Length: 233
Image (cartoon, rainbow, N blue to C red; front, side, top):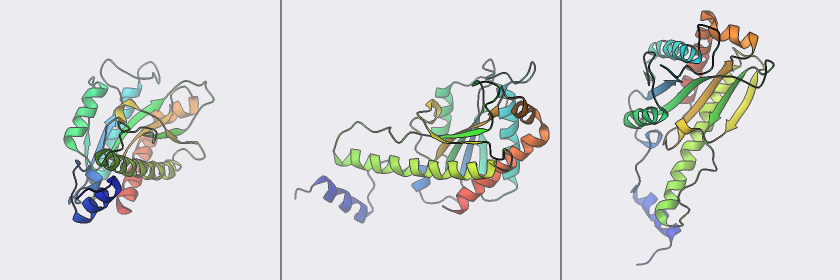
């Protein structure tokens, strides 16, 4: 019996048959979802310079470690970092590690720079919806697009939660949610975002980024956002 692509999709969905690898968010819920946090840069790749002795790699690792500690108090999520120390990791190595872990969600932390001293605040990036498959019209490609759009929508929802909570640390300094083809997010079949926390080139942001109390406040805001997202799935 010959079926059209649409009829085939409906048949597969009704029968509960999935011919694709199902991403973490669509799998049966684990007792404890896994969050992977990626402290940007590391080792000889210092990222943007915050001052003569402190670089982006230091701030991202400090905040990621604080976030891990914050969420350790909750039984709702387990946290693993892509790096626990000051070591170099390529983007390819980070993506490979994330794919191997297959977490429920992924957050990569960075510090912004440039655009002059007046630029300040935070940005949250999610994968671009313009990213498509091979362009074929077959059943497999249609299903791939359905899966892709689902996790992109979930990335936006995670980004919105992060935006709401970071307002507590950077009042009225949100620079919006941004859709962009970010290399670290390419090919990750899960809700995934990049958070740019403040501008190293802005004096006020720079002081916040290096302040222990503010770093903890940022980690707490990120923790609240993650739990809010998970509680509303």
